[in-house]
Length: 261
Length: 359
Image 1 (cartoon, chains in turn green, cyan):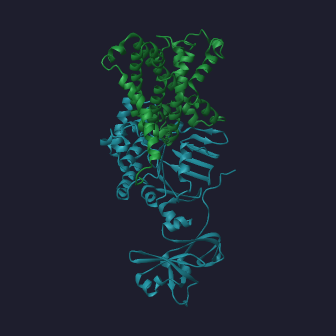
Image 2: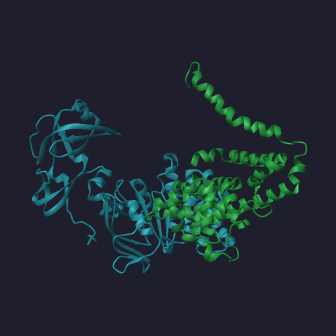
Image 3: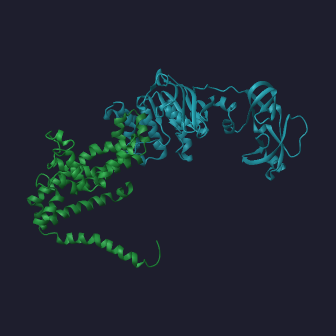
């Protein structure tokens, strides 16, 4: 540590920076209707958004796990031409404006989209403005967090454990399930938490691609957007729920997040 | 049951080319300096690195054959490995580590655990069965690793520096234990080690691997009595020279000639015990056939003996009593005369074991 009085020219902007983050949060907490919070949260519109958010964010996490973990494995373990390109492509949604993601999804899965024109109508197809579309939009935006974190874990892992398993008669598939996955579990859990938190807060891609239909595509973030006009108290209550979840995720991840990325 | 491995492969700077045979009746130790290719040889036998040329056969089953394009994956080989740092699965208990191989080969969880328990008992760590590897001492981890490898009843058991990670204080006891376990185990057992003491304590037959080639093999007595490489000679504390013999004269690579008592023709080794080397401050007169002047190098005190390295046309280690060391003022260094009687030089022909399997 440096001794002596820190320069005012650095301290003042630093204090302002903290204020910039803390003041809005304080405003949110001050406006929260604490006394009838339970009642607000159980009102039908809020409850619907809560339930749908839980369903869609977990669905997006599920999709990301099923597709993203194998992808992370391939990126970490299989060398093929264009691997760097694939990694860049897969992580693009992390920096892409979500609304652009929504538009892109529309052009792919919409009625006249790249695949939508052929596949629309098939049961389970995530057509725009359906719950499936919400899950797809959230997975699109959130999956990179899981892939990147898991891939880093796979690269850091001591692969000789897999060799040891092989000499004990375990084939590739068994090695993956009994050695690789348990050993990357901490990274996988961190990636899953980040992925889920990102999916839960997804707004831009969701509203563009899935719309904002209460009970079908209206998640907490899109509900807040509407409620702010019609029922600000409810908007604040839902915001508080999201803030709490974010804080919980931050606390759970405070070591992993810095460690992996 | 027999292991017959003729194999060649290149890995980085290493160029490995060996012909290794092993039987169930003996524990074989592959010894050699670091970087000789011992671990790579072991990994090749386990199927963890592909060979570029050769044929590996175990118990009449072909594991590798480069001409027939056969390469069994590690999981398909009846081979188990005790790795240098054991590689016990950190997320499994000692018991489940040992049961892992049995589960992989189709045993039910219950049956696998039951058998794993008897293996843990056999190696003497039954009370650690529910411990995770992180809570085991080095010796315990080594035993669990051995039990894990033995539990699959491999036709070939490979051990890579099994005692390298063990404290010196616990080493002697563990070495004895490991010897007993290996003697009692079925199948072919090959131990890789850079520590000749481990090799001598555990193995019936030594295979000396240097720079990717087998330079010598045989029983402990054979190898130490007639070393075929400076590494082995140094190990057993002898002076070894290689050269070309013509009657009673051995010409070394540098041109220096050593007189020997027994006549021989062709490529040969000359072995001189340090006790057979005499040192003098004045040029000696008399019968010794080998006389040259050198320079006093390092001096080691070994019990009631003093070992002196003498540089010069030929590097030699001499062993003298502390009294002579004082008399000769060896601590002062400086030039010194070396004499070796021809009768103190043992010569034997240099017939390299093994053939090359490189194309």
